[in-house]
Length: 202
Image (cartoon, rainbow, N blue to C red; front, side):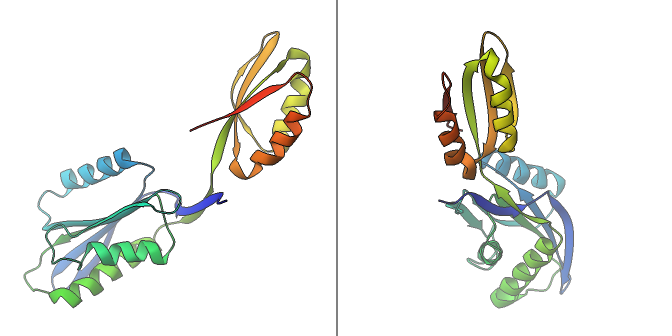
């Protein structure tokens, strides 16, 4: 089972590449869903309303199962696909790369476009910090107040982040931890007396 994925740490903006008078400006965004994707694209259209083309590609999902490549008016396969192929080559997901083109008066031809969009994407990604993100899962535990020290030291051991703690006679805690630790922490919790727990679906 896969427990992590590779993406970029933060957005990269305004990476400029010039080719025969045309300007190609690269942007990369970490995105987790369609909503964040749309926000980023809308924002760029507002910032660059006079650009000739807004070509992009994205991959979302653990294995990049949600993806698209868009040529935005460039010849079919000459822009979106070279961008997308760079995402594949770097094994990146949860990412959107947009290359904005301001046409400079000289046609590049399909092979010239493919080469330039590829170079521009590569150049943009070189400015990004590539990171590996661990998948996380939330866990809810119910226990007696007298057991809180044991529970907290267990959560510490697994580097879990406490999101919510309801301290009463019967306590309830919500914590977040790495998905890779799920089985180990389950084993230990299931051996504890009068402790109930469940993993929450994100």
